[in-house]
Length: 260
Image 1 (spheres, one colour):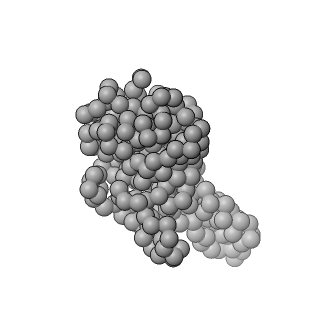
Image 2 (cartoon, rainbow, N blue to C red):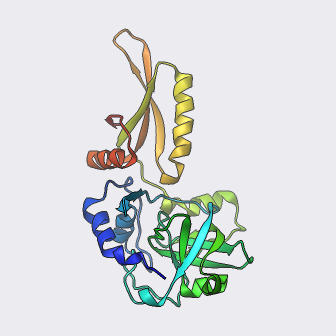
Image 3 (spheres, helix red, strand yellow):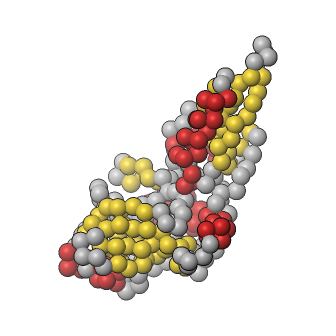
C-alpha cells in the first residue's frame, strides 16, 4: 500500500518554519503523547502536493463521512506528525485537519463494525479519503480484507481520552475548554456596514464559518466624519499582529488588521 506519510519530515519543516500561516494561539497543553509545542506546530496550515490543508478545532459529536484506508508494516517504527513512533499494533489514525490526540470513533458503513482511534498523524493525502487507520484499528474494521471502506467518523474525546456521553450538556462544554482559543487583542476586519442589522447578519454568518476554529466575531461601532455610524465586523483571537497577518494570508482574507 503506497504510503504518503514518508513526507512527514518535509511537512513538519513546513509547519515549523514556512507554513502559510497559523491559527490563533490556543491553550495548548502537554498530553501523554504530544507536547504543547508539537500541538501548536501541527495546527498550522500546510501544503502537500500543491494542496493546502487548514487544521481546525473540533467538538465532541462532530462527524464526517468518507473513505477510510489503513497502513501497516511499511511505516512501522517511523515518526508520525505528533513526534511519536508509529505502532501498527496500537489503535491510532491519521487525519488531515483534526487536532493531535483527538479520539475518534470510526464506523465501517459497509459492515457495521466500529472502533475508537487516536489521531497522531496527518493524512491520508488521497482524494476522497478522510482517515487512515493503523493496522490494528483497520483489522477491527475489516479494512485488512477490503483495503478501503465507506466510514463515518465522530469525535468522542480529546487528549487521548474518551469523554463520557451521559454527563449534562453544560458539563460537557466546560470539559472542552482546553480546545478553545484565547481571545487576544489583534483581529481581521471582515466587513463594514452602515446598517447594524446587516452587520448582525454578517456576524452570525462569519461566527458559523469560524466556529470550529474557536474564534470570536464581534461588531465595533465607529462614527464617520459626518457623524453617521459605521459598524465594523471583526474576527478576533490573535496574540500578535504577525499571527493575524499569517492567518489572513492562509485564509485568503483581504481586510485590514485591527486591534481591539
